Length: 159
Length: 159
DNA sequence: GACATAGTGCAATCCGGTTGCATTTTCGGA
DNA sequence: TCCGAAAATGCAACCGGATTGCACTATGTC
Ligand SMILES: [Mn+2]
Ligand SMILES: [Mn+2]
Ligand SMILES: [Zn+2]
Ligand SMILES: [Zn+2]
Image 1 (spheres, rainbow over the protein chains, first blue to last red):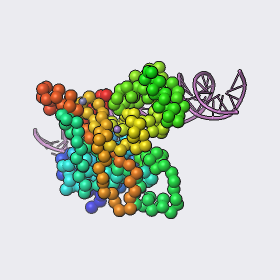
Image 2 (image 1 turned 90 degrees about the horizontal axis):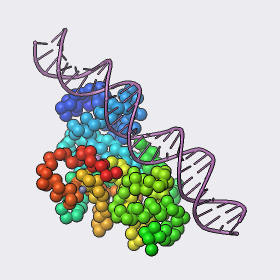
Image 3 (image 1 turned 180 degrees about the horizontal axis):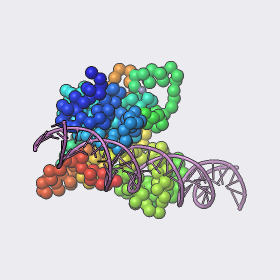
Image 4 (image 1 turned 90 degrees about the vertical axis):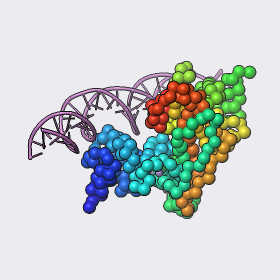
């Protein structure tokens, strides 16, 4: 049973048409194991038209198989929703490494409560924590890097 | 003493050249009293080239006079930093109205703490709460609006 | 006032994302 | 298994925000 087959099953389960494009996109995202932006996916899947990748992502997201997270560059990165948490997307904070661009879900933590102005209605929240992942932090320790991480170009290196 | 003069003083204090463009941009933002995106500012200042507005914003931000907040549409909105909090930008959550696009700082609330993977280094956080502002919430109450707010187009109406 | 430097305007370009439309794929029913 | 309606795809055009290169102008210093 290949990864593609697995993806097709997920599409079937989710109740959307298991097309080749959607299976490829979903498989690529699951294989990556971390959030990928549209440009990254399009580069990974040159056999698909970029528009098709956009539309596949939209469909996958709508069906609850993916959730999108906004990076510091404003671009959405997509991650597969584990079967267990299909119904509650975007309900946890995310961590972004400014050095290598890796992004991680922090699903074990709930969104903190925030007091909003009287009369407001909260629909959702988006919480992004950024800095250095364990690997990059260790690497930087050795090479004594003084750069301003917050404004570093490589923050968006990994599109 | 006009608003422009006031802005010039701030520029001087911040140690950057008090050019006409920067003063205009800063004054416009302070006068608005709420986060404005680049397109909004450019529309407000037709006498300036859009590129100049971009560069002015960059300079103002770098000097600590402004901070930028990302909306759901990926666009940055800029707000003036109060003199008291010049050194610590982006240290509070923000609220975005999906209906009218208005954005507000919630400066009275600190960024919640988040547990990150062992060995990670946190540089900063970005916390966006979105929904309906008091005005729009009240308006919607009356006209009984069932639309899916999270995906509403007008979320980016107020650029 | 003159000079070096930094900022500005303008045009071109880039890039992510959307739209319209003709063609192909999918899938349920004959 | 074949057929037709509906949905998905590829391609081209388009859109808006953002960046870049370069000639020109404003700013601050001597
Ligand atoms: Mn996540
Ligand atoms: Mn703020
Ligand atoms: Zn890293
Ligand atoms: Zn509102």
